[in-house]
Length: 354
Ligand code: NCD
Image (cartoon, rainbow, N blue to C red; front, side, top):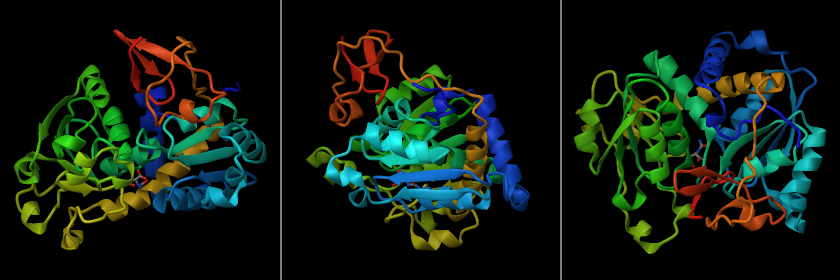
């Protein structure tokens, strides 16, 4: 296993490194042209096993604006994956062609699984309902540019918090900044998973849960809206769960300096007329995603923050998460770390009882 500065989970880095990325992203946003040949001669591969507009195109734009070039696929059916090739072999080959590889895959823990057999750094562009760290970098740069700081904020996170990977990554990282208070606004069936709440508590953050946007909005500095992730539902109750809709009337209850963010795509959770409110920041947020991904590519290529991938403990146990990559890619080692009385899978973070 070779060591690289992979971005699988932002938890692998300290806040100084994350802040360095955001600061570099902010500089690139203002001085984009200065970086136009920083990646001359470098190749970025995008392997998208799941639909994407912004994440894929913003990575491609980022590499092109840095003077690099691109290879990849956005439909695994047109690659050898359709012939049954496993993740290990695809990764081994593509990482011998490219200097950096960006992967989105519906299977939880797949970015880490790819990193194990990769000959170049891997960037996780979303692994099922698990994590989406580069969306978090996009969100942090947006907060920095639009509010000036990422700490001491009251943050509303609304929508499908159970299956929305962007909210998981974002809360994990924002809870590392001092003084942030979270208000989760969701139907009970789609509330934030306990493991994320535990991380917030462990980082010293606080959270409350509410079931009404009207009730939560007046105290917020930032509202993060998300769509319902129907494609990830596992039972019928989730189909019946209430959706939330941010309207101009609800915006009247909010602070004048609230910012409204959304990773996009929007379905029907934000009324179109809200787009004209200057507090709506979701389109500029998508643009900041290019600058922060340019910063990320530059930092990852420096390769001075090697990431430890597995703890390799408790290999005789099986992960109980049916969506875990270890269930699909049978050659993978079983690797867990202990947290209190339970074992946590090193790939997907699901909890298994020993
Ligand atoms: C998100 C994703 O793919 O998780 N989109 C994105 O990357 N901007 C959000 C979503 O699909 O709802």
